[in-house]
Length: 121
Image (cartoon, rainbow, N blue to C red; front, top):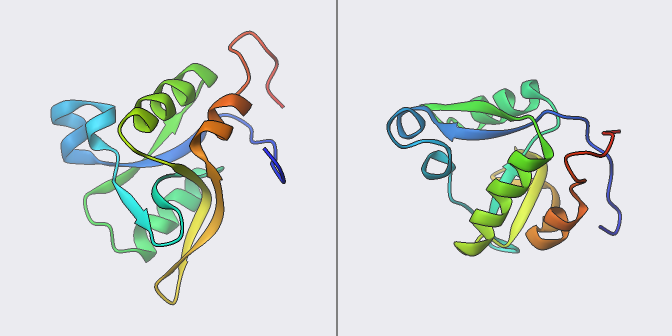
């Protein structure tokens, strides 16, 4: 990824608590849309950032959820890509109703996730 970075595991995303309990992970992920990049999945490098985003965005019923392994990240992103998700945002925040964060094409993120047997940095 151009301008990429290293993130230590786990990384975090947000889920609907109710949907997660009833249907599991994938159906509980929010469908977030940005006018500039389209459908994206928010990922956070810290659980506090995820919780702060939920609070500031007034996303009642949502909670932070850890993606703790490269396999979990690849599985989620690959499935979302097949359903039309085009980007991943890292450490998204809301400022004056604008989405601020680092957005990357989902395919680039999938390809940048290390294999399960590689050391994490």
